[in-house]
Each structure stands twice: as structure tokens, then as C-alpha cells.
Image (cartoon, rainbow, N blue to C red; front, side, top):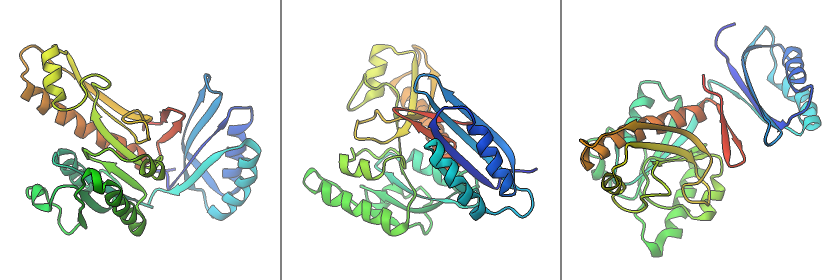
Length: 286
């Protein structure tokens, strides 16, 4: 059948007949199922599904959507259908630390992240990133102070709207989004941070961790909500350290973890593998 050319995702209350109804509508619209993953959350009673589909000959998206609307209403589904060739438009926000920015741009350039970069927003001037290849990407230097935060966020939101941005990535953007902007970006804004939280808050977390003799460091990527650093988690990773590691070693290893965790989270989102399940996520990895 080959790789999927479209991806259908859905969630609803679990009840008998969901898979049969979905499969029937896909068949009637001329689609083959190339890959299907599903999860029944026994705690919440919710059902989640991701289906990769291909054209079986004469497939019609319009015919499928028309017929599927009845099924979606019957089961109370939240659903989406997207062609895999439709690259999502991504804006990257960054502060002084640029390792995640550089990594995302590299992965984008080699085709690992199927996206269109709509711009870079930074609260530091462009020369801060002189060693990062920004090429001709739109760059917005939007400095922020306490008294100008709302004005600066309005500029960010305007840029998101004007560029048709689908996903905002906080690539070590060291500013707290207001409740208002977080709400506007609900489900389409990903953040990365060290996994010591709620411990070791504030400045120099790796130095704090070193002083406490921690044996594991890690990073967490999650969707942004109004609850600071407590949004639904998409991806995490850890690495063991020893008494021989200095604070600088922890920082270096932390950068590596942050890069790969954020990249995996962004890719999962771009490939429609993440479905929000209350305060958690269901991630259908490949």
C-alpha cells in the first residue's frame, strides 16, 4: 500500500462500533488503511485513534468528509484529516541560549522535520545568533520588559496571524507567556525545559542539581498552558550522571537532552501523533 498520504486522528467517548464505523467510511470513500493505532483510556473512558490512509483508486476526501460528518456527530468525535504533504507552518521563539534553535533549523534543512519555518522571534538582537545559519528567514527582534510585555506579546500574536503559523515552538524562550497568549495558542505551542521542576526553580538549575548530588538529569517538552511548565507532556528523556560530573558537564549534557527531546516532540506534533487527553497526551509513535 505504501506510506500514508493522509492522516486521520480522532478522539471521543469509548463505545462499541467506532473502529467499524471509521473503517467503513474510509472504504466507501476509496481509501486503504496503511497504518492504524488506537488507545482506550480506561480511566477517562475516552478512545483515541490515528489512521494513516492511502488512495485505493478514485479516493475522494470530500466524499469521505461528507459521510464522516454523520459518524462524528453520532459518536461525538473531535477529528481532523490532513494530507501528509501539507507542511505545517512553524514559528520559533528563542532567547539567549540558541542550541535548540540551531538544532531545529538543521533538522528542518535536512528534511527530518517536515515544516515550513515562518520566522524567528527573539528577545535578543540578531547578532546574538551570528554563528547560527538563519539564511533569509524572517527575523523579529522583539525585546521585552515588564512594562512592555503585553505590547510585545501583541506583536508576537500579530506575526503568528499574518504568517498563518500553525505551531509555535519555544526553543529555550526564557519568557513566561501571559494567560491570554497561552490560551490563544492552546494545543499549538510547545515548550522545552529541564526536568528538575518543581524542584530547582529559578536561575542556575544545573548548579543547584550538582549541589544536591542528583544522579539523573533530563528534559521535558510539553504543550504550553496558563499553568507554568505544567502543560500536557509530549516527550521526555533522561541521562545518568556521576559524582565526577561538574556543573559545566551537567549543562553540556542538559543541552544535548533538550535538543533531542524538543525535536522529537515537534516531529510528533507535525506528524499528527499527539492527541491531548486532559492534562496528559496520547502519543502514537511510529
